[in-house]
Length: 227
Image (cartoon, rainbow, N blue to C red; front, side, top):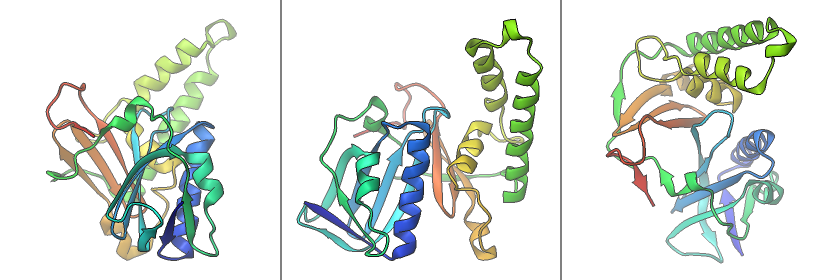
């Protein structure tokens, strides 16, 4: 049994909140865990957004009764959530599951460079609110005979595929960050941790609470890390 000792109760609570939000969008969600030493990365893919969400978790010490050096496994998000003990700041790694296709294609670990043009956090939150309002307004005006899943998806794709300002970042990345709790107001010193980065075919929005990555091209494009 592999036991993860999280840095503190706050880390445990944040991990549980992240898993809960993933399960809200997909009750059968899986997450890929990668850890070395006292750093754990939790990868998930909320299906509504077509992005990859990454939550970094601080560990108090390397995990016990498991691999000694590294951990890399795909597990059930629900089973991992059930194992989180916030008071003890621990979590038990469930049995591995057959990973969904996205779990084999992760962003590269290095080569990231900062990209300019990202609005301030308040601007991003305002952008998402305006997009949500537009989606609700446009879909609410549809007559009954046009209120189909195809039409709703079309309007959604049009809105969420727009880019943020003059950047290449799709609005759906910011929407995902907001929906997963990554864009909540942070202490003033943490606001500076917000940034946009690129590496090969990938773009990444980094926040104090986690990152959202999106692949801007197909699997054949350089910069995709298959592992």
